[in-house]
Length: 257
Length: 221
Ligand SMILES: Nc1ncnc2c1ncn2[C@@H]1O[C@H](COP(=O)(O)OP(=O)(O)O)[C@@H](O)[C@H]1O
Ligand SMILES: [Mg+2]
Image (cartoon, rainbow over all chains, first blue to last red; front, top):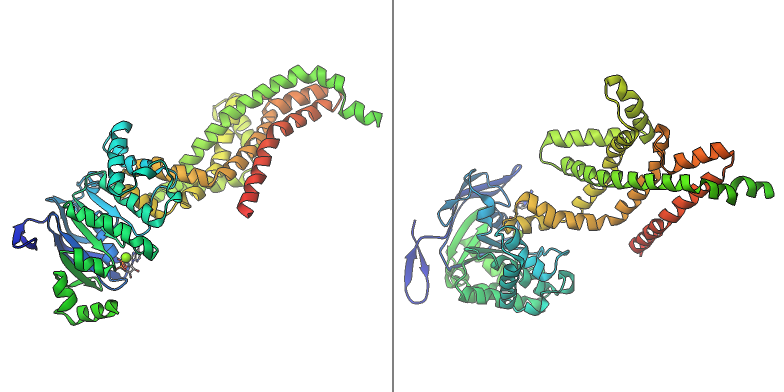
């Protein structure tokens, strides 16, 4: 399948790096995803917005199978993640995930946090892993904190370490689930700055967030979800200024206040 | 007063019993070196089984834990040592004690580990899995180190119990410290060897007990 991506002047047609089709998920009687179709092109930054409980987190978590969807298809770079024979551990390191609550390992140093998967999963030597880890920490502006423990860092710094931890594995796409929601307002900027850098560097990103200013300036596309469905999607100008759907309009008006 | 000293704090008798008790202490130490690691490893296995996805494993672990938490360890030991020969299996005293302790302390260590593992947030598991770590790698590199750290005071306190409990090995004539002291007592008709053994237990375990109450105060603070 092809889709068009607004990039610079002209729209280019490329095949998506992540493609979700007909994804459904229920928790007991609760239908959380009701057949989601969703594609992300290489280097695209897609913003997912929607009311609390609409299934945004569940969608992201299904994309790397932290949550098992009930039916549907998830293709990452042409590989079907829903295939029972799929090597999930190999696929998961191609998908970086950043959590609202950072989830750094408190018993490891910052460098230990970012190098663990490289050593255990990629089998890199400690020296090689440290080198890559330090470079990733440098990218998020925290190389000087390599020897610190997470507890000694601010929330914003912890989240940047979490981003570095995902970056080290060279993911094809990064998923952000409310990366700044747990932060004090004055720390949000530093995390968004890192995400902006990633975007400039061409990282493909799916971001669930309420940072609408950031969405306006950085997103290629906004996806509005409600009650387990994608209601509307389009470029930021359209979603924020001229939404076609009444519910999108109501939601956008609500968060603009 | 003099009688009391003669009977309980008789230095001559203690000196006389010393070599025997020292050998007993060596055997107690040997026993601890065997049963503590056995309990720590067995406990880990029990904890993993009791948290497993497989219902069969979970229920087996639950049954095992219930059974051996309820059975007095002395009963288990005597059953193993004197009962098993009737089933055609004769264990040496050392083997019987090790097996009894494995069964008994695995449950207690297991429950401690389980509490520790459950105290580690789900987010840790998810973060590790999302970077491609397998379930086993996540458990050993991320979950277990934090779990153990969270329950060190309980592990220490249970280990103190295990060390004290090694004295039950005397009932199957394993010459650990209490057995040695009691032998000296029956030869000398004097209680001083037992007092000496008690003093040795106290000296060895007192630091651990202090450590435990330090932990308790830190939790309370
Ligand atoms: N593990 C779970 N068990 C049961 N219900 C869940 C679970 N995770 C999420 N839900 C429910 O699914 C719905 C969607 O949740 P979520 O995807 O977190 O929404 P959002 O991220 O958009 O706020 C909510 O009603 C939530 O309560
Ligand atoms: Mg959410």
